[in-house]
Image 1 (cartoon, rainbow, N blue to C red):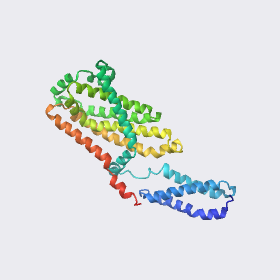
Image 2: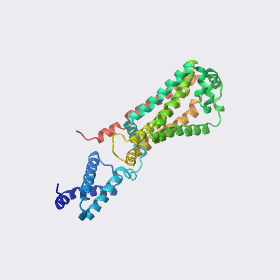
Image 3: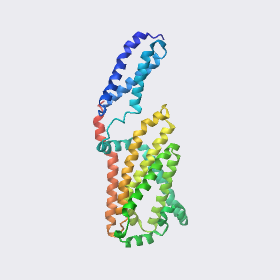
Image 4: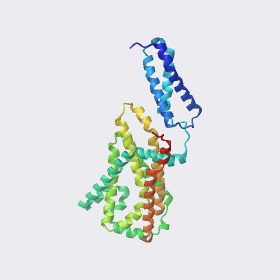
Length: 337
């Protein structure tokens, strides 16, 4: 097909100018949020201009116009994939009430796979202990050696302990936050190994929990176990699942299923989501560490129902928050069909 160059440039310049105007507006008003229609229009103009650039590269005599379009396309690409989030100020309340729960829901399948792998590991641990109780010490890591003793013996000792005599609760809380954050981050970064070790870590941690749960329930200490684990576990475990969720998002990006973008471009797309997921998990772990130090370790039997209720309310509240928060704002931004 023969291209009438002058007619082509005259026809397409309108779209180039419109794209340049949109870029100028975004540079002049970095805090302004685009509507859905504006974002679609920007992407359309970017694609059209990129296509025009490819066509013009066949004409050596149009070097000046070609260089202009190269700069325009480069700026647009940067806006779409690299620099778009850097000039937008961080709004904590909006992040907490909209961005975080919406990002969590957007990667719901990865979260389901994360929690499913953990539960399979828990089932494996419980079954293995039921079949061979003597193998208990093989499952419990050295740092949790106190879990190797008979549950009823430990419960009897803990219930007689004066909680006010428990020294260094602040240091213990910080240690818990640090340890759990390391576990959560590890489940995320191992996603760069195509998710294999993310799944292994989730399964392994699930196995430990399964062993502990079966051990305490089989010894008749289910109430103690619930009052001990539920107050902090209602936030701690979901945070670890979110780390696995982020790791599986990375793994999917490594494989590049459903897209022909380069690896760097694929990661540019999920960078914000990863930071949001791990940031949200971090907040959950901070609270879980405080609760574990100052409430979960308080083993007065008369307060067990209150501790269990506290943990249950936390868990229900977290589920409602992640499931519902920000949905109304998202609906209001969606134009009617």
